[in-house]
Length: 189
Image (cartoon, rainbow, N blue to C red; front, top):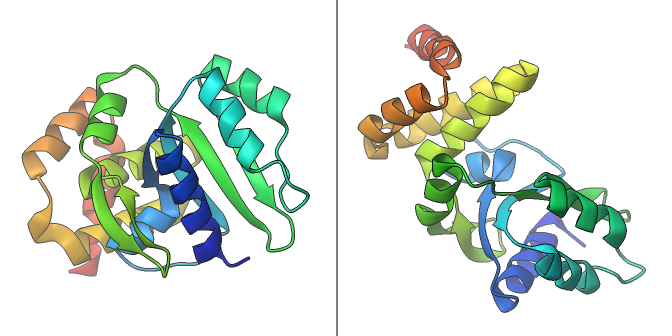
């Protein structure tokens, strides 16, 4: 199963089960910025334990690895769980949206976009992908997140709602991380 096929299956499943979602992470930043390889398909989702059980049931075949009790536990904790496709080494991460204003806005602002050969799905808005990447950068310091942000900025800069982005950067206390990306963008000219 290709990554595109797995993405398509995940999107069809989320939409059939009526689960609110947005594609985020590296696959989303690749769709809006500079493409790069990743084995992860990351979704922010709004679900409860009932939805988690239904989602796990879809991926319970021998083709996938998902442990329903762990997924249920992670849902109750408001964290994340994953589904693995061992034959391809692809993985789906389902990250639970918390009750913060930004998490709600991220799902409300999502947009239908074409991703890979999978067709259309809901993708977080460019500004929210940038904010998510800034949060990841703060957590781990990986340069890949800065590269992803730079790719979105260089490709979509004119479309970005800068007022929303600046307000959210302050709200999420990401000023230091944002300054690092601004320096990187200056270096790129």
